[in-house]
Length: 152
Image (cartoon, rainbow, N blue to C red; front, side, top):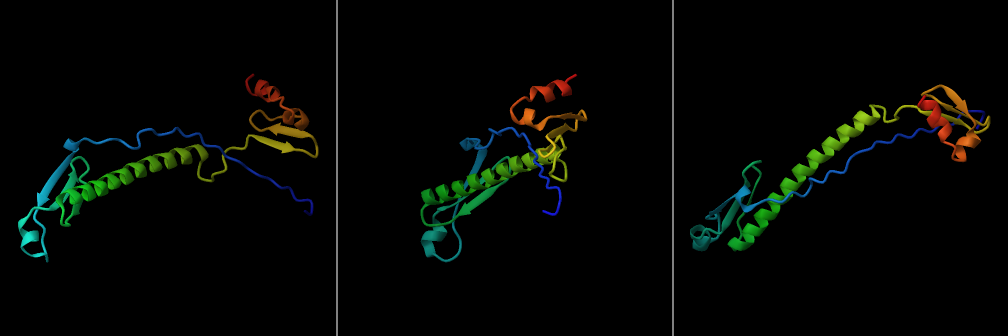
């Protein structure tokens, strides 16, 4: 390749697994309102409280369903509220993970240069201690050489 040097970099971020996703809720966490529907549908719709509005008290997230069956409306509204709460919670987890990742990797995403391997000259340079090692030794698993040099 016309004598050009080819380099590759790799960055590793170590992130904890968040086990708080999928929290369970109690019935007391929600405010359930059964109201009369509005709009077309005649006397049945306007007289019977079949529409359901469910609000999560802490976050204010709510959902409304106004079909014919009150039980079905309750299930639909609760499913929508739980999905919205889950989305909100997952967004917080993802934002925290992205922040942790960017703190570890920096803005370039390349990390810090630790070692340079030169296979042609059989030379490996550890950039932290500015010391050279034989690449054949390092590739055969003798990482103790680098460990001893770094921890003196």
